[in-house]
Image (cartoon, rainbow, N blue to C red; front, side, top):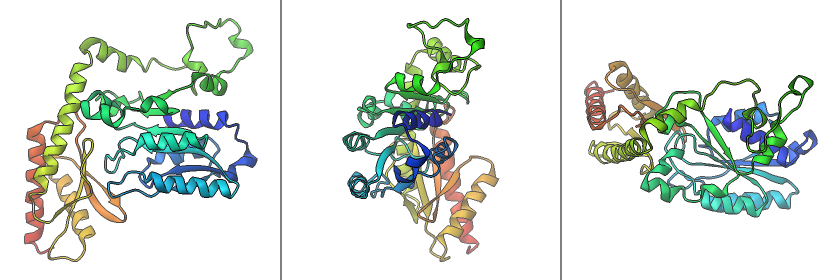
Length: 327
């Protein structure tokens, strides 16, 4: 919903019509969240051209390639419209170079959107302040308090730099609303979002911060960063483990390269099933360029050092067990 809101605002600001779509371009990376494509489809923009920007060895958007793609499209008479940077990809936790993406995007008069659903609230930490220092320059940002603020589902949020664009897109009038009096000091959520009647979702975010302050949340996020670094260091002590990239936030993506079987994908697919069926800890897996990788995503307020250590021990145990069966 938050992403869709940003897409609709960007669509309306640039006054895109059906005849424009086949020459309108959006720029993503292969690691952008699928909600971008889903939002484009729901907003009636499924015919826009999509350019997949290359990533570097750390799986961050290659801004030189981005610039090249945009220049080529301009020469061909196309309209670069939106570029999407990710502050914490779901697969790897990689943070795209938002500063450079913003500079290039606005140089070509594009809407610059940042998907910070997972990583955005790490801005509360010292590391996050450095990574996200120019967030205020982009056009829209999505953040999910149910991820990196450890709060309940249903409070995904979008921040849009120019609220007047939201009002243009979502403010409607009707005869049955004639008794509603607008107040210049208060903007109704109904006038800047998809819904008319809606519940008070913001209470789930406001109340915990009001009760506890921001310090416990900052401390928990700092802990998750430290736990990810600990896991990153310790998991490499298992011979055969290959790390996708050094973690920036709280996700570590890795795989095991077996000596016996030729298929690392088969081994790691079996490994993740063994870990999950064991029931002590839960991990997920993903595909990185068609290779199966396991993801250690540390983002629960209940996850502490003993839990991460249990995960490492479980991984070591399952790898050893599979190797002994000559898998």
